[in-house]
Image (tube, rainbow, N blue to C red):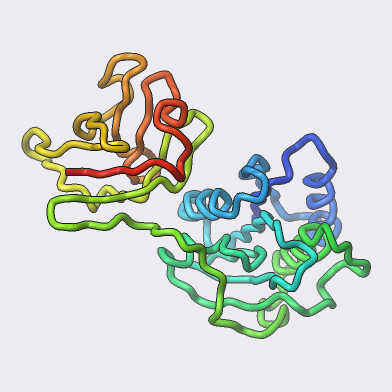
Length: 261
């Protein structure tokens, strides 16, 4: 069964998600539609890029990821169809593929421009429904992606470092994402840390200059209300507060500086 996943900033209180699904199922009634999330922070392209990057490894080849975080809808921004590691991504060309583009094998990228596969009447405010959803459904039905438009090697890439800077014995990173628990997920990959597998750690994690100790194994390695650094399920260094919020303690993601010494 063909899978189409949905990542949007639409929320669930309005009709937008239902309209997307209606278009998809009208064209490809046997497809399996999987809701990843519709709670991307409105207009936050980096948030959408992070979620796409994190869920991609867990889906089978041939999966179609429809990602709609589109503050430029109605403008001359392009819509793209890319194939990464055997899976497809349909999204506005506004940086949503930044993290996956840097980490995954890029097989093909096309500009979605063949109106034959759009809905007959296009709204200037809802390209997710009128362009991206029908193209995803036609692709699920076996459409050759080359028929969607011309190939391209030019993409909009967000100015964000997806991996931290390593300078001698110091790793300097930033925060890519803050989850709903207030945990700060950094761009410091586990393989960038000088973690000892045979003895105690000999380095410390600093958040905005404050030393919160070494990397721990789990939240409960510190007392309730205390900060903890650990390697999360993302494989990245995360900063959390045991049963609390690191965002409330240290500030919004963009303002937080991380160092490992």
